[in-house]
Length: 124
Image 1 (cartoon, rainbow, N blue to C red):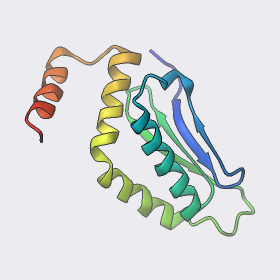
Image 2 (image 1 turned 135 degrees about the horizontal axis):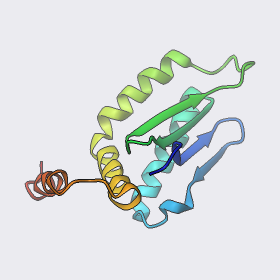
Image 3 (image 1 turned 60 degrees about the vertical axis):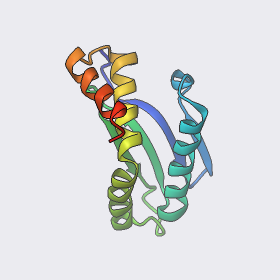
């Protein structure tokens, strides 16, 4: 099991760059593009740096930071934007968590996996 958070991707308003962890290259291209859009739009609107990281339990965390002298960083807006993204992208985020648990942690039980399969099969 991993000891530290594993970064999936991130973007910086300061460097105007997007970072994607190549350990996740097996993800479909449309998922990578959606993650890039999500991160870049967040940093364009809010500022600072956003990273999406898997914690040791396999849950996807939104981590934000800003330079101390950044007067344009909107901390309150950032919290609200993350809440909005979690609601709008719930299915994507849950799928990424399942992917990480199965392929990186190997700890998704057969029962949990069957629930996910049933969820997808029923189109819920």
